[in-house]
Picture (cartoon, rainbow over the protein chains, first blue to last red):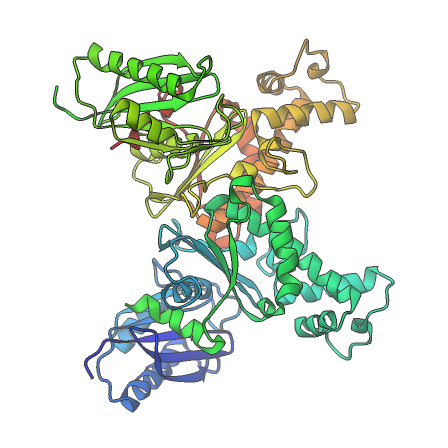
Length: 313
Length: 313
């Protein structure tokens, strides 16, 4: 076939998803491999290469336009992955360069939240928008900012780290070493910390107290959905912090929409009612009721691959 | 003369500055008129017109490429001035349209801080930069964000309102109606509020206690420069809030520099030592020691005119 095809790769701490994508955003073939278990990054890239070749051969394709990669701590300008705490490789890895050398394709790389933003802009909820914010609510909080139709990479190439905006002075200790980063409050990890704090500090009864084993964000969501008052309050607190932080972001870039993706975003109104309330409360009048809160319209499994592939064109 | 010339207009609450500018940023002729005292905005624009014609005639120029206007609450997209609390005109004024009709020139308009950012990018401290933040520290706090070499206007056209980012929950009441806007802490107005609070809550002796009449930001600066401990602490507090807020902004747009302009920015190290310390403390490692704090290199009187004129080309 002679139509243009690209490869989208989403590298996570555990798994690497690889997809063969056409220009319209159809994933023609995809696979998953482990991110860990390779002695060197070169061996990992060699495994990637053989998976890519299999995907293309399977569909009778022998020309690939390019490879786009979404990876935590990925730098668009340098193609490096720098000190990613959840990846097996330490220090600064010239990832795009290693891939180019071993794969023989054009390779573009960015962090996972930026890739998600590109995917939403090209194929998803932000299609046609020139100004929006992408927020991924997972283990951490990722963000990608689009202004004037372009991703903001900034001077360093690392722009869009709203998850590490410090929003509580002397607040909770973050993995990054700072205190009070918003992701310690608004991620799946953050809501569990809040729940454990609330359970310790409050006297109220709650089904969360009877919870067997370690509490998860999902447990808190289920309890809140079943009407547990403390669990609902935990979501209100989380939504307040997220809404307040988003109001600051809106005052800077004035987006048309904020697009949410990730596990915690599935909590729906439990989270987004307080988010909207506290965001609107804190907005300057010119921004009030001007920002849509949207959910990703890309299927969970495909969003990261599509986003990464959007880099390759 | 046939070289291209533009008009830069800076509209303030009291005065309107008008300059005739060439492409290199030389102000060939300039004047000042009152902003107030006209019964209608049309009469004000007619007065503007006659001043512009005088400026051009004085230099034997009969062709103007265009007019750029920096005005509080000015909207780049619509050319409107919306509910500017410090200007004599109420509601939404189709300012650029009225000017176009009565002047007969091409007119572009933006808010004053965005105009300042354009001026610094074209002629000043941010020359050649593609990613920077402009901060004006005056009666309020204005800001303009440049990413990928372009001003961020956002979906509404009002992007860059960091002064109204709410950084203290249930904080000081702002003119905008919200509580805790950063400009209630970090502007010339804000530092005076802080000083009065400190004087009330603390017991320490301070020359500020003996101050005749109403305290100004300048008084606090002079006291701090003379070694007054409380005045120094007031600057440290102000610098802390400003530094913390800037760290959030940096985590979003990752600028090469932050350029400061305005009266309070003249306090120098008194303000910028704590600003830098608290900003760096709150930055993610990838941003640490990557952001220059710069002062505007444009002469005070010229900056606003040059910024506005940069819009016209």
